[in-house]
Every structure is written in C-alpha cells, then in structure tokens.
Length: 176
Image (cartoon, rainbow, N blue to C red; front, side, top):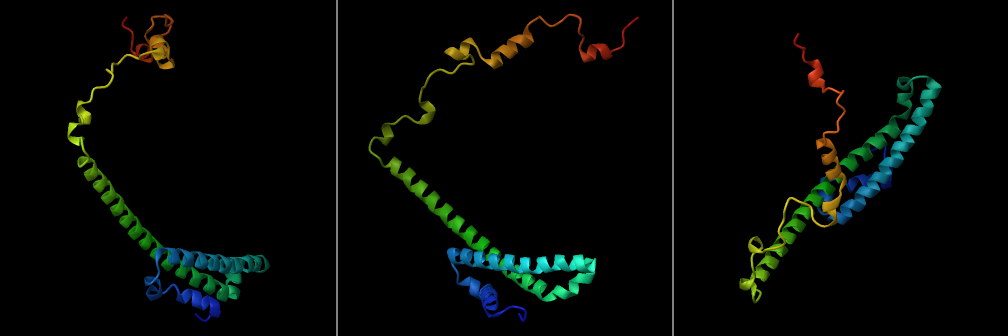
C-alpha cells in the first residue's frame, strides 16, 4: 500500500496467503507477534492525534479528514493481523489433532502391552475385586458428629415453637 513504508510493506507482504502457507506454527506465531506490535503502534499513532484534533475542531466528523493516512496504515495492519491470526489458528488445530492422535495411539499401545505382560490372565478384573463393604452409615469419627448430621437431627426434632404456623397453614381459610 502507498501509506506504508518499505519495512512495513515487507511485513504486510509476509502475511499474504502464499507466504503464510510455507510457515510452521512457531514461525506463524512469531509473525503474528510482529504484526500485532506494528498494528498497536499504528493504531496509537492514529488515535492520539485524532483525539487531539477533536478537541481543536469540536467534533469527530470535522477532525476525521486530517488523519486519513494514519487510519489507512492502522487498517492495513489490522487486516494483516487477521490473516496471520487465522493461519495460526489453523496450524494450532492441526497440531492439536496430531498430538491427540499420538496420545491415543500411545495409550492403545500401552493397553496392548498390559495384555501381553506375564501373569495378566491371572489378575482379577476390577469388577470382581472386593474392597471394604460400603454402607450408608459413616464410620469412625465421622459417625459421632458432623455438621450435616447435626442439621438433619435439628430439622427432625420436635422442638419447633408451637406458636408458629407454616405459610400454607396460615394462608388456608379457616372453617367457621
């Protein structure tokens, strides 16, 4: 673009789809970082003078035409950042899929290795293993006292004040 200097133009050219296709994930992330920095710089250089011009002119619409070149630079970097970020996302998805496939294969091979181990046929499957008997009642110190148990005892105790009525009892009409 005409608003970019040589170095900025080269940076934006690196974000073209043909150039991005040859990059690996790490290179794409490094390019994304460089483009993001350039975009932030261009955006700042556009916004600071624009806000000062608004104060001088009294309206944003009056100040807008003076800063078109800086706005075009910021927009060019914004577009470049969008394309690089999209490429990084694509590469990250591919990398995650490959890693997932690798881990699943490692887990499958480890599982196959356990079956081939000597004595594996003599092991008791998990479903038939017997552990301690599980009952609904707490054991040990927990059987003596716990906040939950005390709440349930309190709720079921007949010590509720006799003078209070429930909301449903007081709302029902009395016979008589």
